[in-house]
Image 1: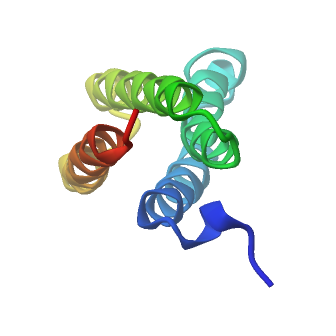
Image 2: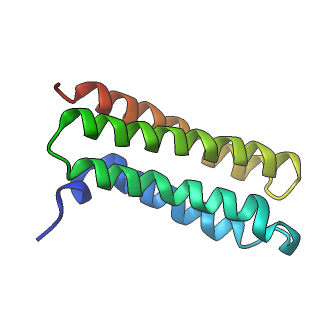
Length: 118
């Protein structure tokens, strides 16, 4: 038995991305614990949480609204990734890996949101 959202590729990819980012953020300086570390972790978790919440709703308008929240959370993650790269907390290779995953996920979420009938 599964919840409907567990079958969504965007939810699965969001889960994978957030777990990878959270694992990486454990190596950020302790001085960033309540700043960028907390911010990127909350934003990364928020992507899958909003996809799941939207998927269980009956109203297509509400589904689209929660996908919008997920998209904005992903944009926040990307901005945080730029910040941690500039602060040299991650290397170029790790940044490019997460950036590509984020880019692909963003496109998939936008396409999925457009596919929801009103």
